[in-house]
Amino acid sequence: MTGNKYLRLISLLLLAIMLFGALAACGGGSDKPKTTTAAGDTPVTEAETTTEFVPDLPELDLNGEDFTFLIRSRNAKSYGDKYVYTEDMDGEVVNDAIYERNSKVGEKFNTGIAVIEQDDSASHAKKLIQAGDDVFRVLSAQRNGLGSIATEGFLYDWNNVPYVDLEAAWWDPNAKENLSIMNKLYMMPSDISMANFASARFLYFNKEIVENYGLDDPYKLIDANEWVLDRYLGMVKGVSTDLNGDGVMDRNDRFGQLAEHGASNSNAIHFFIGCDIRFYNRDNEGRLVINPIVNEKAETVISKLRAVLYETDYAIDYSKCSEGADTSGFNHIFDYCRSLFAAGHFLFVQNGIGVSEQFKDMEMDYGVAPNPKYDSSQDNYWHATDMYALLFAIPVTSTDLESTGIVMEYMSWLSQKLLLPAYYDITIKSKRVRDDKAGEILDIIKGGMTYDLAKIMGVNFTAVIWDAYTSGNFASTYAAKEEGLKVSIDKLHEKMEAILS
Image (tube, rainbow, N blue to C red; front, side, top):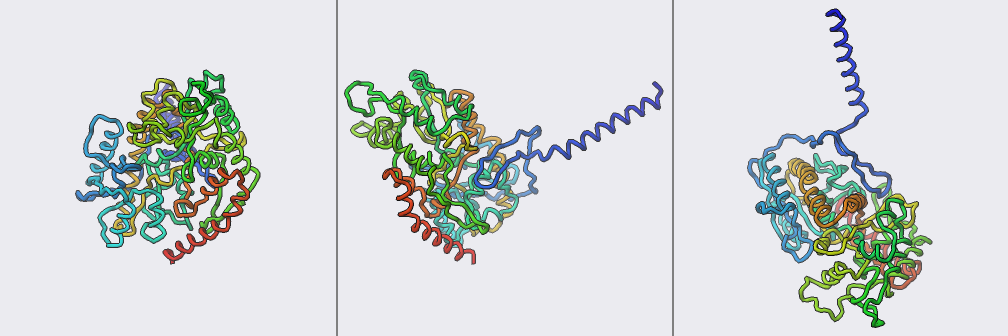
């Protein structure tokens, strides 16, 4: 081959490589993790990336000034925010991930992450804002408290915070849709804190009971798209046993479900929402609009749940489970009763990730399952989040929104890289949940979290579910409450109009 031919061949090869690269650039899209949000409240899925995405943010130097959060105290009796700040590394994976993340944020922006801690952080924020005191950048508070101060005009719209990409997975795009009111967004979850993820309710199940009673494996039902309400309820009914033969069903026996009753977090509410029945939508102006909710599906779901979980021998609630028991060694009756799940007395218990700490020394194997679908035609699994759990907000007194947005976006992204794996993959998937399949289920749960903005803002649709569940008649219960719900929605819109005018 002559020199000219050799050079010509090399040129052709280089041209081919360049053309291939150009085509890949046109068709490959962004390196950013992709999310998909369809119309309505649909779950988010992340596509795999071949190269690491880093947020495109401008340079920022905070000149050694602290970036301060006002958080619900880490020592609060419940719902403390333990994920924003820690003083030092101690060898515990989550703690050390928090410290490493904060150190990296500090190094990048020449700042320190600082916190002000208050048990009622929302009320404290209100006082500081009313005084015009700009001493904190971001608020972490219980969402019901945020709802109250949002309608008084004390919070800034996340939609207008520069450099924050609310469609990114580390912010949960489901929340962006669910938590908006009149096209304003006053509170959002972020992977900076695991407190929101920990608030989604799902099912733990005892694998040994499943095997001993010859029940279908929930994991196989999930894979076959057959994990639906009827299959779940059939399993609950199939294990009820008077273990000690005394003719009385109590905590010494075996039940299909440890049941939680009440208008805030009852099983009925979580399963109802899991069946994809929604009370309201939004119009083009972002106002809440009631769905024509009274239908055969809603009536059927309530009827089926009540027949198995309410005052039957198939389920026992926390109050009956703990009645007469010595619970002095536990924080509350809920911890006591869940200890009996670890001892093999219940097939199912419904709660969030946080309670898995109680099961880490459980001798029997357990798994996790999403709340069942209504039927196999339902597209997604859904998991309501706790109205008392924590979300982030920005006070209207913030004077430098640009730097706040830059730090929050970078810190949220970095949390997905460092904190989420430590909490989720290591602590949950590897240490407490004992099989790879459980990790896949937790991914499903995280992608299908829902947020009840109406309840946060004081319009209590979920009370309708509870009252219908206890009465056994959904249609009449809803009919009696519908007008009151409409009045509450109108008042909410009036408050919003007042602060937006």
